[in-house]
Amino acid sequence: MGEVAVYSEHQNLDLRNLDNVISEENEFEEANSFPPDLKGGSTTSYESKDSQEAQKLLDKGLLQHGCSHYRRRCRIRAPCCGQIFDCRYCHNEAMNNINVDKKERHDMPRHQISQVICSLCGTEQEVRQVCINCGVCMGRYFCSTCKLYDDDTSKRQYHCDECGICRIGGSENFFHCYKCGCCYSNMIKNSHPCVEGAMHHDCPICFEFLFESRDDITALPCGHTIHKKCLEQMREHCQYACPICSRSVCDMSKVWEKIDLEIAATPMPEPYRKKMVWILCNDCGKTSQVQFHVLAQKCLNCISYNTRQTRG
Image (tube, rainbow, N blue to C red; front, side, top):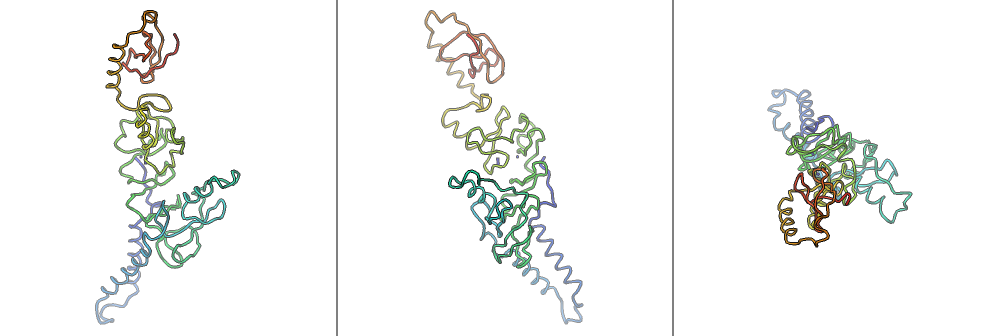
């Protein structure tokens, strides 16, 4: 999807927090250092060196560890099965593999993670951002609620309290729709049609749960949601109706004009020229009685051919 979101500062400890840690260490050193006249010179160079060393320690191994899902400097112990994985996606892929017994397949409950293992020193410890043993930062972005670590901050991660999970793209670019139950782009804030729990279901094409999907998601004109890549595949196969409600997913006026020409060029046989049928329009929801044609029936209300025959 890929989405106003509420930004929780206490749940998103990133580079600014690391700078604060270094600043606090410097202040402590200043308070406990000798005056310049007793040491025979200024302490500025020493403080600068200590700050650089602290930052160097925090950044040790940056972007050199992790998996295909996240770059991070720790691994997690699954609270469900006790095994160690790089991330919850690695766990879910392994434990839901076709070779795993159906009774043993399961997903990791992300909020229940309590133990992590530092990738640099191997120390197992409670969930925290900085390793208790070697002092390395295990993730530049860290969320204590989701137990999420990520060194790649270019994703602009943020935690949404309403969604209860972390999302990417920057909190200033998204808003939380309380009816839909999810974060959407500010670009559709005043135009998207709300559907109760629109994101809390599976993609109608690939059947992946949309709320926690890592792929881009788009909202259709009807309000239903779908993976962007799945929608593109539909269009490649000339499918332009919502898989859930059958409403058109784009402007089809040019197509309707072509169908008008085809119908005009294809007169019905004499026995069917006066045949009337009732139709329901999938686009506007209106019913109407129209002349039957083997190609299609046009809605008298919105001029759409996206209709279905209800009775003869």
